[in-house]
Image 1 (cartoon, rainbow, N blue to C red):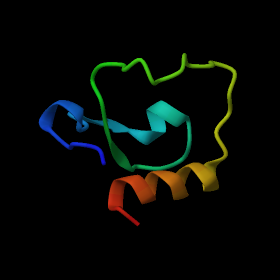
Image 2: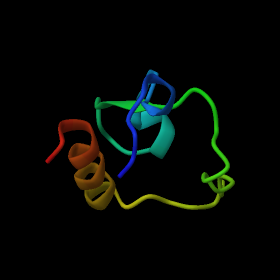
Image 3: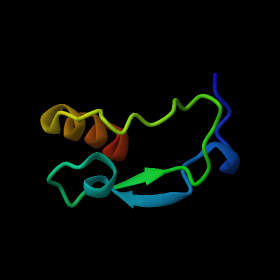
Length: 63
């Protein structure tokens, strides 16, 4: 089981529109520093809007 402490919880809020280039005003929790478990960003990847919104809603609103 993961130990949830202040050190391993999101510590900032970002605009999903700016991060994923999708049409939404959703603000999402994020980490201010990159962990070794995060892959490099692929600038050519395009996010599917419906899928991305569903995943973000799940993480953001615990659904």
